Amino acid sequence: MITQNSAAQPELCRYHVEGGVAILTLHNPPANTYSYEMMQALDAAILRARMDEEVHVIVLTGAGEKFFCAGADIAMLDRVTPAFKYSFCLHANETLLRLEQTPKLVVAAINGHCVGGGLEVALAADLRVAPAGATFKLGLPEVGLGVLPGTGGTQRLPRLLGSARALALMVKGQNLGVEAAHGLGLLTDLLTPPAGTSFLAAAVEYARGFCPPERAAMAVGRIKRAVQTGAELPLSAGLALERELQQQLFQSADAKEGISAYVQKRPARFQGK
Image 1 (cartoon, rainbow, N blue to C red):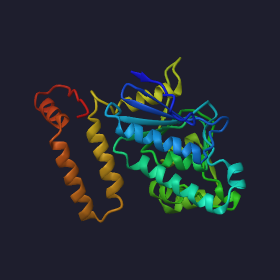
Image 2: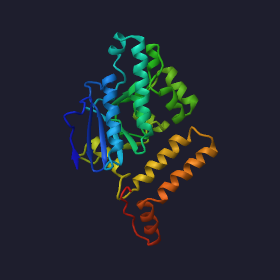
Image 3: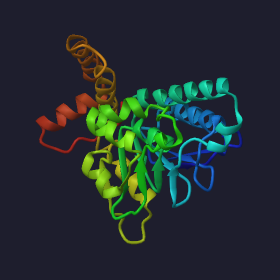
Image 4: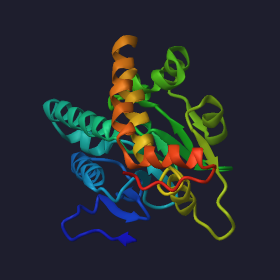
């Protein structure tokens, strides 16, 4: 099933659903830079995907073939007041936290240059994929503007790569190629689309691998919640959270199906319920 944008859906973040996967496309040519208006549109799309029971996985990508997202609109930042800049950064933080805390897996399908705030958006996803052999760059070069990565980069990148490696990338303002980013763990997987298939189609198929009937999407989402929230808790509290989430899963139809299928030595057919 494919559901195209409704008339009320902001154009700056296009939304459609394809086989249980919600595809959110940042759309502001040529570089998909984001403004307050785009963040509002992304925020609304995240909530829409979160609340849709037919959506099991979210794919976030950029329009076109050259840019995933080049970060915040610098011309906009040049003309607004410091007070607006602060509120703009606060809302962007809130939007990406909403993405991060949504109990559905989020895959960033990085289809072009992904720098500055664009990489910060991608860092809020759970998995990041890119085309094998691509020549675009990823990095946080904000130090060259005399500022820091202010949409979560100073917090999420160290959690992903470790403090020393992340700090070196940020203070050098270093941009990485796709292979180097994959080698560091910044990219989860590199995809090689079959002949005649677009990278986005390959990324959606990758995301569909976490959807029913092959995968228990509810378990995937609860694993995400345990990891994301538990990382900020003491071990005893994290284990308590894990037990509560496990109890929710024990009551699910998918857990009953998965256990029965294992005992009966047959493939499980999950429903996401």
